Length: 103
Image (cartoon, rainbow, N blue to C red; front, side):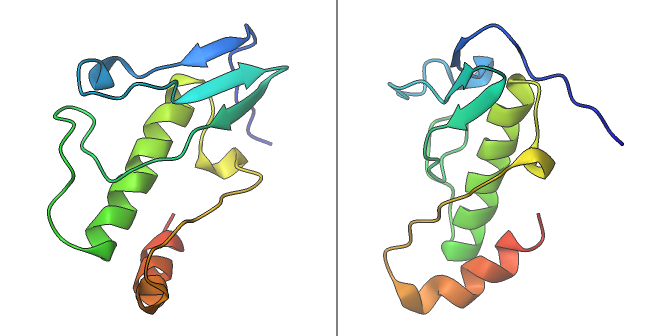
């Protein structure tokens, strides 16, 4: 069994590289050893710019951002209990899902 040590002290998680990119919210909160993540957008965390492309690239970037937030908290995608996906065009769902299942 692989053990991950989630940060035990409660409080906000903010990735160092995202500072100054215009992100005005905490990217996650740790409470009682559980990491509660905020929604992710397809922005490059170093530039704050939305990545070029379409739903495929957007999905990859959102998941990379989520991985970075979870890593900062001492966790990872493999420990996710629930993930909500918000998509504006259901015609894009199949492409989004092709990327999502890779993670």
